[in-house]
Amino acid sequence: MKARVTVTLKNGVLDPQGKAIEGALRSLGVEGVDSVRQGKMFEVELATSDPERAKTLLKEACERLLANTVVENYSIELL
Amino acid sequence: MRAAVLLFPGLNRENDAMRALQQAGGVKPTLVWHSDHDLPKGTDLVVVPGGFSYGDYLRCGAIAGRANIMNAVRAHAERGGLVLGICNGFQILCESGLLPGVLMRNSNLRFICRMQHLRVERNDTPFTNAYAKGQIIEVCVAHGEGNYTAAADTLARLEGEGRVAFRYSDSAGSIGGDANCNGSMNDIAGIYSERFNVLGMMPHPENLIETIMGGTDGRGLFESLAAATAKAA
Image (cartoon, chains in turn cyan, purple):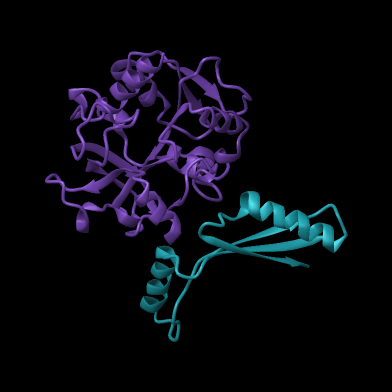
């Protein structure tokens, strides 16, 4: 089964890259963007087809490597 | 002193660290490969040098922080052994859980490579006994992700326990403003572990060992380590 893991910065953590992208969009004339925050997305293929097992496994992957939970949140989506 | 210098794919400052240990610390360190499970017997000091381990993929130091050898380094630190992480080495120590917090992208989004003054916050540790408390030293910085960030309670604890090793300053020792090159919280350039046996720092003391390189302010750190381990032995 396939899954998508999204890692984003926690609220309140400064995101200078997001700010720079926000500024670049503004200078391109893309109107109406209030703010941008940059994150990461992982597409993961899993051997298991059991959703519970998949969630447990991905949670472990996030806690141990994919996210640094000091400054990042993660969300798991089974596809 | 017996010193081990760790090597991960993508690091490039291991020879600078080895040279500094030899010239200022008087030891011939052993290079240890990341997939090894053990440190050489009798290791007093582990140095995690700078560079770009695993190409900074995922997050700086994230993959190296979980390498085999880091379990041995964790056990070494638990026994009270000394660990020094410089630049990417600091990032690796944070990612491995040996030090709290995280090094984020520099606030100006640029890679910074320049000389930088630091204030030595205390001199009663194995890393800084050759300096004076409050001494201003000039070393160099070379990093894109050195913006030290931690949760408010972690930061309060670090400050409360006197665990800030170095702060970015100007040549007169003033803190803040332009002296803070990367946006680090509380101008933090380096921190200690709870028991002061692990130090992580973004600047490069190992590059300021010889006058030909523009200064010798980095020598004190390696001389301190040599003195501290001689006393212990």
